[in-house]
Length: 241
Picture 1 (cartoon, one colour):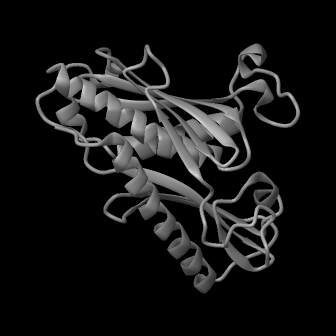
Picture 2 (picture 1 turned 45 degrees about the vertical axis):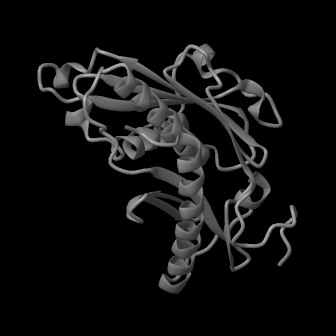
């Protein structure tokens, strides 16, 4: 089966990372995965949520949004509606959970790091691209904290990265663009760390069921792709001391 962009079934779209994209944020990147483009920024404050006050423990959270013309048709801004959609809430909770797993919150101390992921152009994989780019922004923020002596020890535990996989007409494929994602029989998002451990797996039989053997093939595809992505992250981030 030939994919419309000519990629092999196990091939990830070209990933481009533009670091320090925002001059104001403590950490930022513009990450491109094919035609999907997301701005990820990290903001550090010393105001943790009330339930963590005076515990010595920090927090990492995330917010996610999609610009009106990120998609083919304009979508109204959610701010204009006065509430977030269920999809947006689900995605930003996923990003927050994923990135918190990368940090020893006690070593972080009573700081809050907020990762904002703003999709400026969408062609599938916006949540997975946000997680991958969000980790880089987070790492840049941690480097700044160490450099400025805000913290004494590196709180990062491991890289975190994510990719989508799916079954299209029974064929396992990695990194689904929108036209593939919208027609997939099975759609799955996989989040892993640098120790090859799973953080989250979201797998749905959209139009069909899937077997354990098919699940294993999808997870193998995702694992191999995430190894490549983590190497790319490390090349961009460099040493953290």
